[in-house]
Length: 143
Image (cartoon, rainbow, N blue to C red; front, side, top):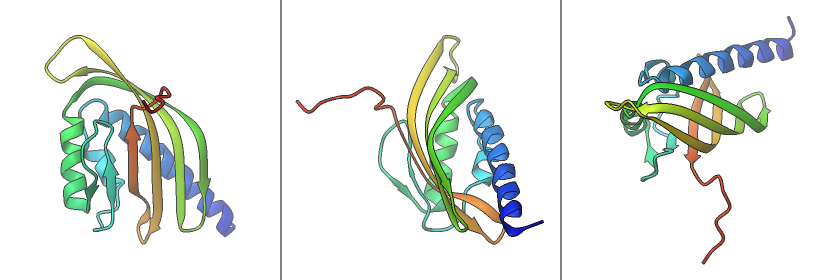
């Protein structure tokens, strides 16, 4: 198998794991999603619920636990706007739609996000190193 085909199959396998892990995250189960992140000190997260930029695995991991705990009975879909995969880095720009119950409630909520993720190939394969999600889907001119 050529290096290019191997890289393509590794990336495809990683993306399949990512999609399954994000579905689990929307159910309030963050473990599989957290396993796909680099646990290095240079990881960053700008979460979809706003707040400060989290830096370093300890802070990012804690924020992911907190964010996932807000979801219950969720479903998630995405639309990829742009992506690129290189030999060491990759990125994806997408929209994300999550239908869920706020933990402890029965009424359904919807969260629509713009998402950019950056990935890095590490010794044990592809890992997420940055995620920025926000709900600024509609244009908001200054004013």
